[in-house]
Length: 226
Ligand SMILES: [Mg+2]
Image (tube, rainbow, N blue to C red):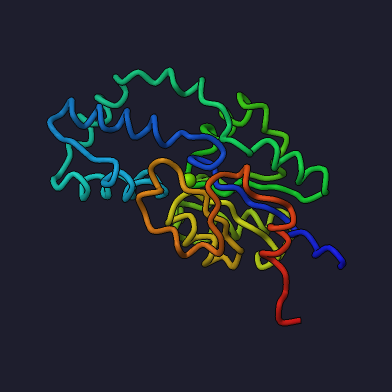
């Protein structure tokens, strides 16, 4: 049996997928909300994540059930201990998958609703910056963050590849929606938070990237109609 061709590229989400920034962001956000008289559950927070910053604030208000003083919240958030930022390792399986993809000559990109500085700083800290040929971040899609398909389309355009021949790796439902709308095949990798949400729009779900092989990536983009 001949091995199936590998995807033309693999596009990674960033937050919650490359490293678990979402859990400490949830804890810092909950702490800030409590400091100004609100509260939020992990289930409520799961409706917030995966969106761009502006959209996230309105979703947080919806999850809390009342208007939030944005300045007071920002000040309370800034006062939280954020030293965790520089201590979180890459998620299990990320580096091994990147190694395997590099060995196979498959280019990798990032499509994210986060700003450039955040992504660049953490990739450099994790020693992974040179693994990604391009980063389609929030700054480059002019506010059209996930679930809009723009970041995925931009990542594929940067690489000169057809979205249908690419696989997206995502931890959240807005990200999955964005990748599906862009025409990529999507693998969901639920985080501690997004495990509470509906990720069934993905073509495949794995408990962690440790459970994803190159053969399975090839299978996802196989043209069954041929
Ligand atoms: Mg994510």
